[in-house]
Amino acid sequence: MAKHEIWQCVLFLCRKMQSSLIFCFLITALVAVSVSRPTATEERIRIMARTIMTRIKKIKDEHFQMSPEIDIGPDIDTPVDGLTSVIVHLSYLQLRLQVPPAQHLQQVLVDLEILLRTLEGLAVSHGCPVPNPETPVYKDETAFPVTSNYLYLLELQRYLEKLCLNMDKLKWCKDTDVAKTYIF
Image (cartoon, rainbow, N blue to C red; front, side):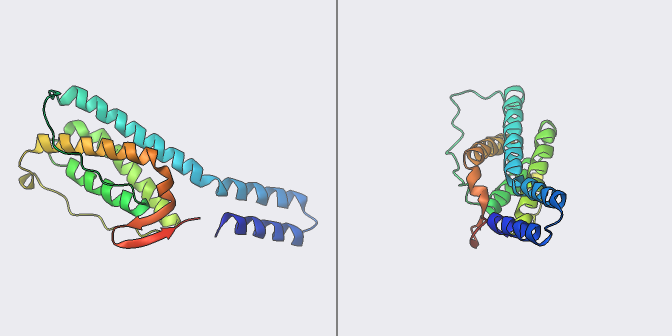
């Protein structure tokens, strides 16, 4: 239901209940709080993303002493296309970061899990498809786990930076396999 439809319903109820001014005030206040909630969720998502980026920077400084001359390969540019695609990509990175040795990544993984649950809740509330979780990656599938963890941390950091700059993309559902569904 769109915001203007919600307000029309509130006005209709207030007109029908003519005698109760307090009731109308309470209903209006509740609707105002619930309509403004996506902004609070958006800000919460931005704060979570920035917290994870701060933790990644600290982990890189403490656990990955890489020379600036080392070429780590091309940047993977995964676009922020919509709510469902964000969930898919963050879930992919989460699985890749769970490959041992990942002891120093535990807090990032916990924060990423909370961010994913928040995004999934937002997706469900807006009727977006929520993707099924992938199967875990095992150590045997990763030839160089320390390097792999470092590269996926960098990718996560870049993706979260893009997400913070493109929060407006969370207003619609889009997956590579699903057509755009706009949320109003």
